[in-house]
Image (cartoon, rainbow, N blue to C red; front, side, top):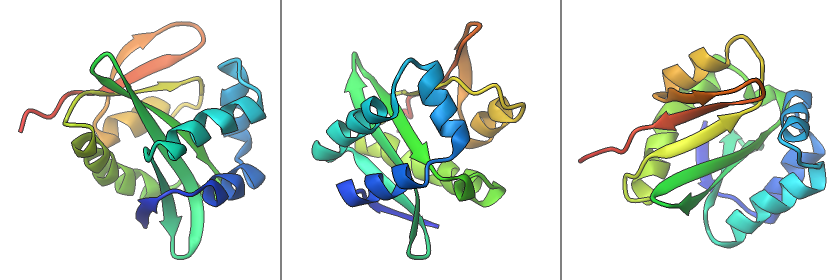
Length: 145
């Protein structure tokens, strides 16, 4: 797998093949598909988004924005993305995103109730910092280089 700067076309491709689990997460977060698409597109337009590829196929788009010294991620993927190979790739790639953000903490909010979500985030390096009945917030601590 590899990553490159995402384009609006990458985002459209992912949303055309969006995994049902991602659609459900967007709905649980109170976002329509078009609202979630627009949110990610805004980050892309500001140069804060990567397409995650397997060969020539775009499997996912991850974006981020900074707020109060924390980088918050947004994410969309097709079903093919969800594999051990992708989790291993994301462990390395999230560190690159963190470097681009000045090594500040990165937070990701998950509305998924999939039994492996906590384990996936832990493998990537995140710690669960908050949980309620609807969502879990995970944080990759600041990298003090």
